[in-house]
Length: 361
Image (cartoon, rainbow, N blue to C red; front, side, top):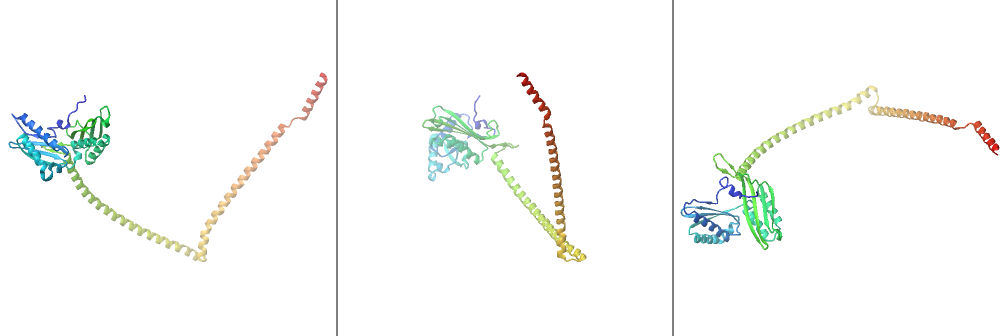
């Protein structure tokens, strides 16, 4: 549980190669020690030059050393002074002829070692570790990485208890062997202790051809982008031609429809002008008076109909209200008759009460 493998070492022989390329039968230990010494000398003298990796090849006569750096000016120095000093020091230490080659890295945001070193330098400058991590992630994603994972461990922010924190954006498929994942590690020696920085960058997939040659995801992406550009250009031309044809057809239809509409409107105007003249010529009336009378006649008829309907409605309402009043009066008279008491019965009761009082006395 929790055992992590270096992504570069896991992929050696699949889609990544060795950083030292040579073969030995007897002197393997001596040559391995020489390689480690060369790397140590370069790292000591060019610690701030942004060197991401050192590759070595050995022949019978000399050792070829390729240095991949983001700051080639610092490595070369004034008139090649620093590189000459490094070559002399390596030759004295190993006793071999050294050929030093400098390879410039154009996008340092896509190299895990350089990203880790930049975060470590910011931590030395007392920058907040969260800010440094998020800034590095955004820069690498903008540069073209498909996924980034950064882990920082140690006494973060000067805390007494050491802890680890990590952030991730995008995909980082560590178990996928065809995935091109770059791994980098750096340490920041702060005043309150060491802080370790680990960076994983997912740069796409490396796909093997049938012949066995490797094609990087970047090359494949470039090929696809070129094909898409060509397709888009041809597609744009065809779309422009089709659009121009459609616009011409639309213009023709609009012009023809406009002409037809104009002809129709002209015909209707002529009919409207001719119709009243013929009518009034037959009636023997002047054109203007006859036209006004005919226009006003339907309006007056409609007004009269509306008034008649309104009168009928008012009459019906009045009839309903009068019938309701008569019903109310009848009910009131009935109630009054029911409420009036019989005077004879009242008088008899009063006399009976008086007689009872006398008898009691």
